[in-house]
Length: 109
Image (cartoon, rainbow, N blue to C red; front, side, top):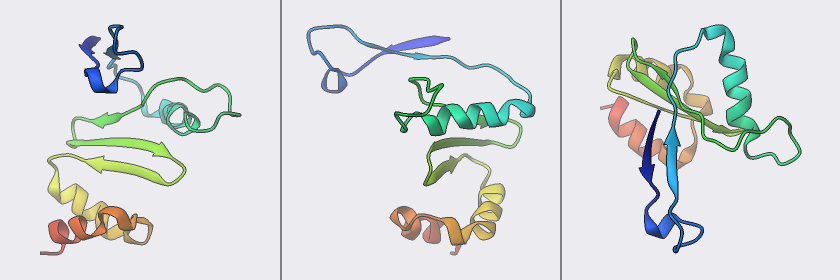
């Protein structure tokens, strides 16, 4: 576990200290559906349980990090260019247009 201060311009109350609290742990892949539930339920007020946190998934052995953020998808980043290129080619039909130019420049050049 580690903490870091919330920047002043991101605080709800500029007069109060606020902190980001991060917690990292190892879990079996059989728990993946539970972590995805935590990530996706955050934006849906009527869904319970709904933890008030962001959930990032790391595969350190493969060198990727996934941030599933809502029903639109997830960000996948990391230094493993070969794996990211494979994912890019396989799931191209699902990629959001928002970053498509940057992804094309990275994986099609």
